Amino acid sequence: MESFVELCYLGLFIAAFLAATILPLSSEVVLTSLLLAGLTPTTLVLVATTGNVLGSLVNYALGYWAGVGVSKKWLKMTEEEFDRAEQRFRKYGVFSLCFAWMPVIGDPLTVMAGVLRIRLLYFLVLVTAGKFLRYVVLGYLVLWVE
Image (cartoon, rainbow, N blue to C red; front, side, top):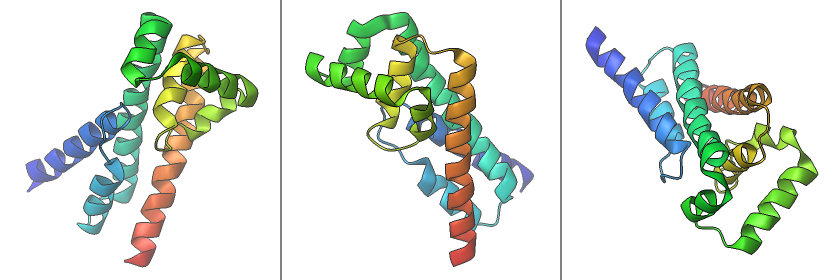
């Protein structure tokens, strides 16, 4: 049974990691299922947060090292869309990274942070805070409704 639980945690980590990239996956569904199955909520939240932040770090690295051209192609953004995203990021600043967990805008935010060379420490602290709080709130809601 112990190896099954470990596989559940690994599956959550992989789902959370991939969900932070442009792949259309939902780590919330996996987390909810495992919470309802009775796995340890604290461990689940930490595993999901770690996987999701590391996935966002891949986006950051893409923006940082691949630059604007590849980032636009990867995100399938026009020049105008990219300019608007950059203006929004500059307008709301690094604190917008707290919302990197949000669908649709989260991935471009993390790529844009790399393109704009946002300090990695700021990136990690803000992205981790936002993603962690999202999973904590989800965990409480799932366990409260159950």
